[in-house]
Image (cartoon, rainbow, N blue to C red; front, side, top):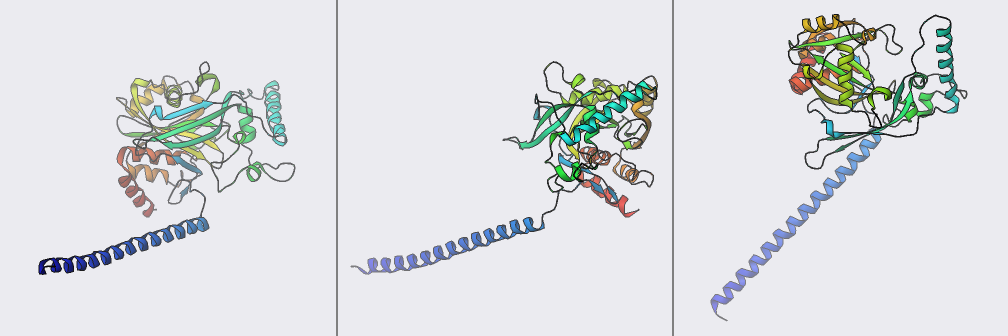
Length: 368
């Protein structure tokens, strides 16, 4: 063997040892990192399971509501074609120990009407929520919402709103059928309400805030969204078609503000559940194109189909600081419909951006 070959052999051996050592160290480092990461994941999951708490409902400083934002953050609108509504055929039936409550309501309405005390409340056909499921589109991870509804009526809704009434065994519908740690899990007969709530902003940048009439059966006298409309089987499901939530919102705009679709833009921002009353809502933002607050007031003065549902309207500058201060006013803070503050917050985020809105809200809270 020549000296050159011997030298090459020695060099090769040395390099082999070096590379083997480095590879062994590299594999040990990788294995150590994997083990450490895995252990961290296990600890994290264990901690979450031990420290798990129910989902939080919307709050703003001292303002606490029962509105749970299930889907949507205000930043991106949910496309109409991403909402899939299915209507099941079987009508809702109350459990035997609650069925008598509905019969009481029907009997009392008939008695009051016969005695001339007042007109009977119309037992309109409604929808109950069987389930609402959220997924993401494969390409851009946009929201995909699957809403399943069942037929019901208004008297069943009123009966099911008595969530804290005692049943024969001493329990209540709330304690028997609802789990506070699983807010999205509930029987359909306790969820006989789905509606749309709309934050309307005029062309001169004023947010419309409505006060519900003292004559309505649910939420009398509270301050609420600009427009609130419940789904109706009779009106919103032409033929055998499932209701279109954007069409329901446009109906609400027409019936409560006498506005036509060409006069505004409409964006679906979120799906929200009032966990206290088990009422579902689709939250919308509507921007008027050329109509100012003064012109809207004049339009409404010439006639509104559902004027009886509201007893007052106020206009608030649609700036984050102004809306936050308005929500937290002493004469308002305890008089809000549960879903209204969340709706206005989401509308602000949609227009002004999350960072700007949260900064203004924090300042408003500090100044209380």
